[in-house]
Length: 206
Image (cartoon, helix red, strand yellow):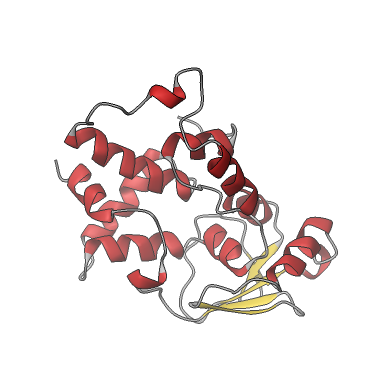
């Protein structure tokens, strides 16, 4: 199954959360807080099965980070084999993806845009170009926008917008030099995600 390239707004309405984490999508959700389509307002009146609840939770998280099922499941299985709380370890692995870190630092306005920036060679890690969105960032890694890409309109706009927002507490950012550092792993309480990761653990453990 290929990567989803449709409307992130419709997908957010279907899942009931802001998958893009942008103000624009949130406005649509506030205006139409129900699933898209002709029968969207009538959906969900019955009690969903336990399986359905766990499947939807898994779908929410995989779509939030823009990942396909195979890649998402492989990452979960890796997390399950690491010492610690599986749900928290899993979320930390998701947060360490380079496309996500680029988004968290504000270089990109969405994860989808961050994936494009990385794939097109606009992002460097510790001085080396990395064009793999799933590249795993380590604590202490320095992320920079390529010098020749800093004048791009989208990146300029994103940096101006980021100056008015609070950066995620586990990353450090210098918007003047287009440089950020992944300073620590996020704790579960740092991640204000509308997700119950225990349902995802139960889904994959069935």
